[in-house]
Image (tube, rainbow, N blue to C red; front, side):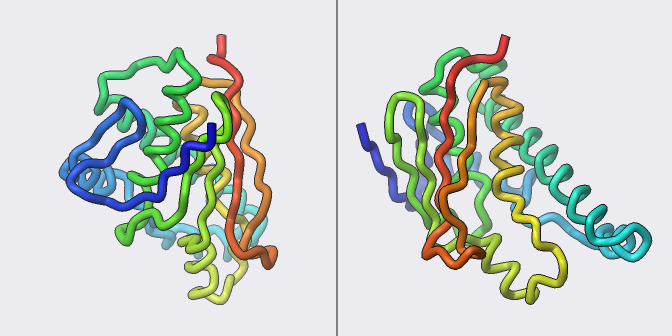
Length: 183
């Protein structure tokens, strides 16, 4: 199968049958910014420690991403995803739409009818960690963001992290496999 998409943003962003205008993408990004204001985290860490801070941060990222996916689905009038290929295409599209303002610089590859490989050599999360000198927030939110998308889609899926830049790999790589719709 191996349908690879190197993403470049133009006047239209596509995810298979799903298409968004640049205006729609910008509205979704404005409503769901990639970076959250983390001022709340400082107080939490000071009072409850880094473990509590990391746990709350990841929980919030998952919840924020679920809401973002629900809004993406609403753009297409989709209330329920019933097909595996639609779920994968919405995840593929979410990689592009819910990227930083600089855009998604990775690739998405349909490995099979139910598997999507996401590769990102220019991982914005890793870059922000490096810019902050890590400062104790060591939990990468990318997996939790994808889990939020999967939660909103209501599908049974695995998300297997194969490589991460923070582990010294040249790129962050994950494979999302959608098995079926949740009952």
